[in-house]
Length: 96
DNA sequence: CGTATGACGTGCA
DNA sequence: GTGCACGCCATAC
Image (cartoon, rainbow, N blue to C red; front, side):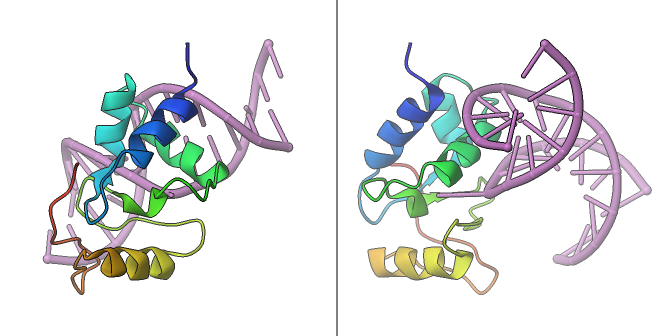
């Protein structure tokens, strides 16, 4: 039985560049549709350089937060090709 | 073992 | 449309 963290990290690392996913979707794919809370926690505590955690946004299409700073996350997403609205929303498509 | 926290989500005023 | 409050899971202390 893999820890939630392992599943989450794996799914996040599977996200293609230029695309984003949501905490809820990841939690659902991880096997716990109600664990989006834990998903965010895992990513926060486990800052892995090989995990594009900045590609994970909220279900509202909002960028959400980032351990390094939300601004940083937005900048990375923009570099990836994701367009962020003035309201902090990712107008680009999400999921893989 | 029990309490508190968190990069959240949804509902209601 | 905006703001507040409650609910939820897993992990850390």
